[in-house]
Image 1 (cartoon, one colour):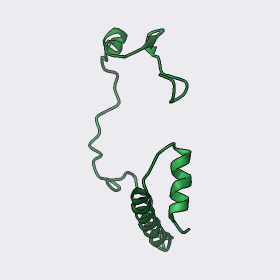
Image 2 (cartoon, rainbow, N blue to C red; image 1 turned 60 degrees about the vertical axis):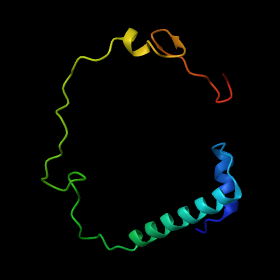
Image 3 (cartoon, one colour; image 1 turned 90 degrees about the vertical axis):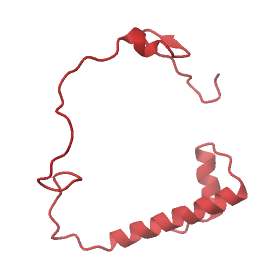
Length: 99
């Protein structure tokens, strides 16, 4: 896949970003390099590679705490600084343009 400024403009319009020509060129270059690295990874022969038990590697300590219930914030405390609330939750606009 060739990443050029036309593709970056299309992607930017989909996510509603306004980019200058310089930004488009920079992003196109960065995306092209990232996809180049992914292509190199696609060429690796991983047929005999063992699956990983975790990102740290099989048998390595994960460093994660046990998944146990703990006290959390009350709804009142969690919503105290929210600009808008509704029914003990955060009220968010349906559309980005909505104030």
